[in-house]
Image (tube, rainbow, N blue to C red):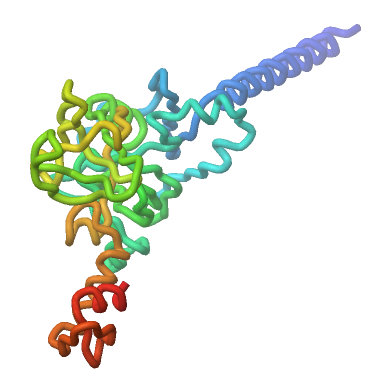
Length: 290
């Protein structure tokens, strides 16, 4: 074999070796990524997280504007192929966590536009699931029962969202029945402040030894029997515009019924009557409205 041919063989072998090593490295990276949850990435930074660790990304940012135009994210692609146990390993129940970072409220809108209809608001520290990021800086999110779009300028994401979540996680009471009474004091002799529907969530201030839970209700202390709530650590979430206008626990149905009934105010009172226009008594009015 000539010297030139030997050199060709050596170079060819080296190239093959490099290709094999590169393929092996790519395979290891793919296996590593499959083991973890949804990621948010830009051209230079990829954040990947699970419940147990944080890795990658720039942890030195000073504003809540972690995501910006040009970010690409597809939750379905990130979760595709995961086993049931892997999908359960979400962070506080979120695959792709966002935390509101605002002085007052972060608006949630029906469409990704500053002119979009308001459907809810997130307070500072409220959590959301991020489904998608638009090119012009809007995040398609769901926070509690409220789904819509919020500006990414006021959302913490990636490692900063996870670090913030660890700081602010708090016990939350979730009602387990309909019409659960919230009282002024921890006993059944006191006045009822309001009644809550099933699934309503309120921040817990203290779990008392006498079977009552002290709650934060619209920045006021209130009490609810521990028999009708489940208490567990959670992140707080957005409230609807209806709750913002009329108070926590008020549903759209309740508001609609009241608005419908108010249009008949001033019509004749007729004992035993049930007509909303020709006349009704108290029970007849309630029956006809409902």
